[in-house]
Image 1: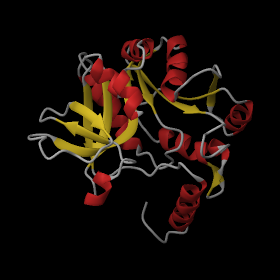
Image 2: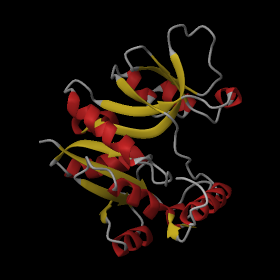
Image 3: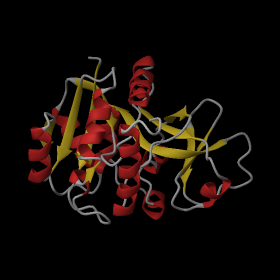
Length: 248
């Protein structure tokens, strides 16, 4: 069993942006942009949109996506992804792709799947890149990951980096995860840890339960859409790209 699936969790009632998955950006729903980027990945055997909302489901069916209807009681996108994975025994590897990152790099998805396939001991893979500006590293809104020389995450945090983290790379974390299926199901069975709740960083649950998280280094990240203002900025950028005014 060597198949891989990308599962894209999507909910209607985002705290800061209601109806975000179907918000039009450059003439297409945000979620469709994400789905289309995933379709360009070569290592995936399936792409599934996981949602509890019929408006999202109907729209996704309309553009040809595979959709899984999930419970409305999930507390996180990872829980929603795990519900689909639990019923999908044919997939050994699951990539959790955030539904609000319309410029996710298909090549990164392929790298995540290849990394999982390369070593049976690897359970979780994520990605990170260097900060472009020093000021960004000090922002609590930017999630950091401390990575050792073997490419394994030592810590995830929001505070400005400590100067005492000798020998570790401090990078900006990207919210994409690849799981071995059994590791994903084990992950969601654990209770949230105290530090996870304090930092609002779900990935700390893995570290605090002794699971290694491998980090792939990328040149840059992909901008997410958290607010209507973010959507306007990305809309302008994609329209310029479509007109050939800027490179992708």
